[in-house]
Image (cartoon, rainbow, N blue to C red; front, side, top):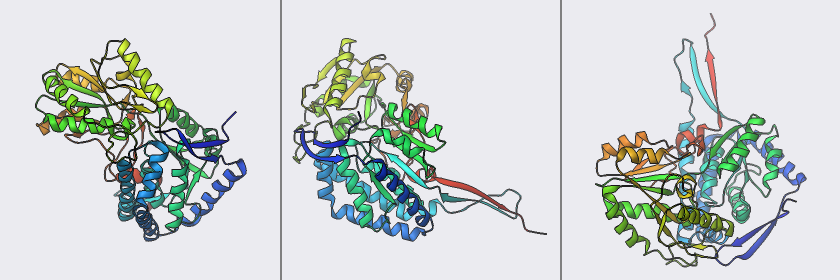
Length: 457
C-alpha cells in the first residue's frame, strides 16, 4: 500500500516537523493541465519578461535566506552555514540565466547553399523534474532556471523528506511574478511518475538521483518517447601526485568528501594516492580530519551535521563493515549514533570492495594506493560511474594530460570539483547522460529547429 502522507523529520533528533498528504488524481490532473495552459502563454513572452521573474526570484531568495536555510537544515540536516550558501548559489544561478539565456538561444546562422538557413531554439513544453533531498534547493535550480528561461514550464516531484522545501520553491516563483503553472511542486509518490510521463502534455523529464531511480525513469521516458536527462550517482576519484601541495590538496579533499555530511554526488569518494605521496597524505589527512566537529547542524561551530535518514546511515555502515571484512582498515572515525556517522578514513581499499565499487553516500573517505600514474588512471577509470574527478599536481600540463584520460564528465585540476552555472555539468557511464548548467544545460530542453529559405525566382 503506497504512503498517503509524507513526513518531514529533523535528522538530528528525529522529531517529526510536519506531515504532507499526497495529491489525489484529480489534483494531479489539474496541476498538469495548469502547467500546459501556462506554457501556451509563457512560451510567447520575451526574454526580458522571463528574466524579470528570475531576477525577482533571486531577490526573494536573498531576502529570506535565513528562513530558507533553516528549512533546509530542518528537513535534511545540512549544517546551517552550508544551507545558507546553497540558497545564495541558487540566487546567483537565477541571475546568471536571466542575464545569458537570450544570448545562449539566439538564432544560429548556417551556410548550406540556401538564401538563408539557420537554427532557431524554441521551448518544447512541460518538463518534469524529479529531484533528490541532498541539495533540496540547488538541485532544483540547476534545471529549473534554464528550463523556465527557455520558455518551458515545469512540474517538480521532489523527495518525500523535503516537501517543505518543494512548496517553498513554488511559493517563491509565484511571489516573483511567475504565472500559476510555470513552476508547480507536486506532492506525489514515485508511482505517479508514469501517469505524468504518459501525458502528451509533458515533453521531457530530468532526474537527479540514484542509479536505480535513473534506470526506472529513463525506461519510462523511452517507453513514452520523452526527452530525458539523467544525473545519477558518482564515485569520483581524487588523484594526488607526489609533487602536489599536500596541505592544500588534503584540505580540499576533506572538504569535498565531508561537505553536506558526505552526501554529494560529486564529492571525492576514492582517494587515489601515488605511493611516494602516501606518507605525507596520511599525516596531513589525519591532522585535518581530527579537527572536524560533529553535532547539531544549527550550531554554527559544527562542521559536520547528521546524515539525512537512518536508512542512509545503515547503508553506509554496511559498506564500511563489508569493506573491512575484505581487508580494508579503519584508520579513523566510523562510529554511529542516530543519524550521526563520525567522519571516517578507510585505508588499504582495493578493487572489489564496496568502498571502491559502490557509491558511498556519507562522510567516509576511501584511500587507494597506486604505484604510478598509469595505475592511478586505471583505478580512477575502474568504476561504473563517471561524474567528476580531480588531479593534484604542481605540473598543470601533466594534470591536463591525466585529466584527458579520465572517463568522467568533468575533471578539476588543483581545485574542488563543483557545479558552476557557467560550466556544463553531467556524467557518463552509470552516472547518467545529458548536461545541466552553462549553455549546454539550456539547450537540453529546447527544439533546435532548422529553417532553410530559398529566394523565389
